[in-house]
Image (spheres, helix red, strand yellow):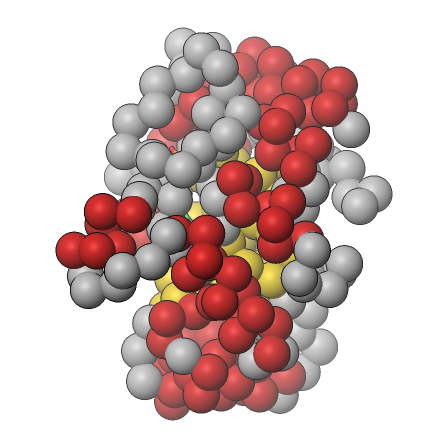
Length: 235
Ligand SMILES: O=C(O)c1cc(=O)[nH]c(=O)n1[C@@H]1O[C@H](COP(=O)(O)O)[C@@H](O)[C@H]1O
């Protein structure tokens, strides 16, 4: 994997101004950015457009999970905005993912990556049991990753802990995008299935999604630089 931009900074802010002032401290040649539910619900497509104008690749993380037609049309809207990556929940099932794939393929000139969330990195075995699933997260992640690949998508979101076992069963070009990244000295917060940046790269993660360890750091740019150094050392 020779993509130099392995870090995707999660711009989880309550308003466009805060997100853009963080983005202004970042170099679009060195990292990508993610717009998620909080920021998009408040700021809408305008913030995506502003980030594109600044030269950033944008991962629009709205985790669509709905009936096939609704999800497909939402994915089309994202692709027409020109985002670099968009995601759905794999648990929406094969027909939902295939409909999204087909719709995306009809968007003229769209080069948007379409990936699916497997098991949220904030969940552990007990959380799956609570929703009626008596299964280890890893086993469910494997099942959903294969379903995602067979539905024609470009990759999955999973924890870096699952990357090594997944690499043995998916195609080499299948993207494994991993949130739940925590440098050794960072606060864990609500994440459960975590790994350090160096471990995640060593395991074969395609991209690392990192929010609070950068955005809540006293010196975000320095925090990102330390993470980039750790990644370089692990490659
Ligand atoms: O799809 C995602 O990006 C995602 C999936 C997942 O399983 N876990 C997860 O944390 N995320 C997102 O990744 C980011 C992680 O942020 P931090 O925990 O602050 O590093 C958040 O914006 C989450 O919405």
